[in-house]
Image (tube, rainbow, N blue to C red):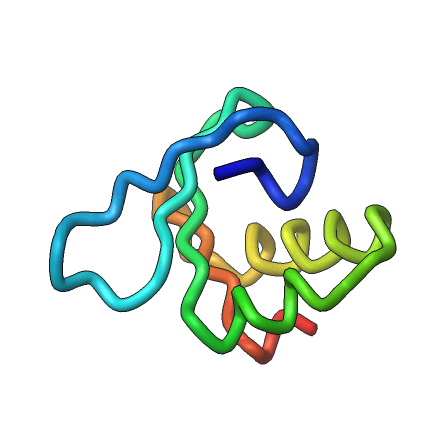
Length: 75
């Protein structure tokens, strides 16, 4: 899969049975979890800067040391 933020090759490292995507890409120093509704909304966005804003909001909402999660409340 391609990273929805930088466009480069990324990996989904979610285990079987996990609902959603856990993205690992070189553009981020952490894994990013994306819920199914969050992924649908993210992929529908065509503006790169708006996608990055969603990522930054997920990072701000994450507890210290926790993986950021992109959910509908990040939009």
